[in-house]
Image 1 (cartoon, protein in one colour):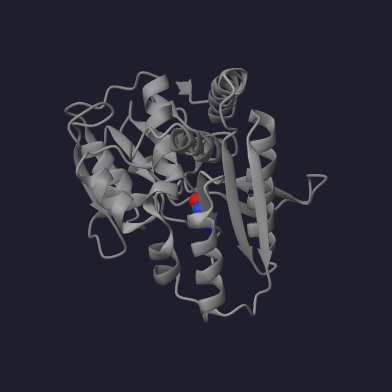
Image 2 (cartoon, rainbow, N blue to C red; image 1 turned 90 degrees about the vertical axis):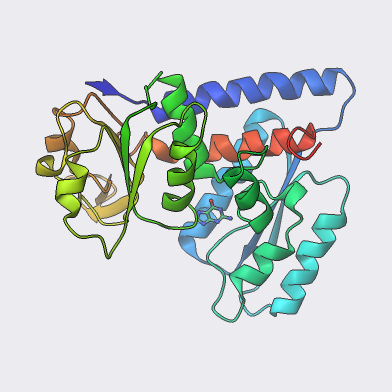
Length: 293
Ligand code: GUN
């Protein structure tokens, strides 16, 4: 069984990005610049945005964190996005989700200039990805694609089962695995809450991508021996034996599934660390005008 090490791979990618940034600076080019907009005081969002800003520093990017009160109006937030859209110094813009209930995520997402949409959430980028055009691909699917590539996992002709059809993970993942390219050319089954005989379908998967958001949902009886298992879930559960009082687990019951799998991502240290590397990569692509030209 191969343990797919997302922590190691993400730090390799960050090193590659840092090397390119140093070259750009040495050539007198502009430092890549990411702007992150954070609305309100959600604890998890603050942690994620903090990690993104820190990662920018690590690779030599400039970053701007725009913090806004949770009672900001939708119109005011749209104006903040518009101002960043028009700021020529900023290459990438992310608005951290979730947003307060009185603000439409769709309206805000649609306001982001596709050329700066390094989260890959806008209709323009989702459409471009679907058409197999150059596009910003959302961080989690992009991170998974990169892990499959760097671990030389064969995908052509394989049966890939994706559990979960979210806009951010399951749906784009299914499109990427089916497209004509590598990774891709898989026969894809996208499963969701209304799927019948889920365990039976999972047992036919050569590649099982689990993004259902339920702790230890996938058990050994759902996995074909030799399958590649990608676990997108991350959950905190209480564990008095740990100093912190908790530990992290995924959507897959790792201890019983790992011995069956030919390759598997752990939690933590699998898909999670790859998402930040993906965001940095998209921001570099934007600074170098590689996607929209
Ligand atoms: N909230 C959870 N994941 C993400 C992400 O990838 N991007 C943004 N902007 N918000 C998130």
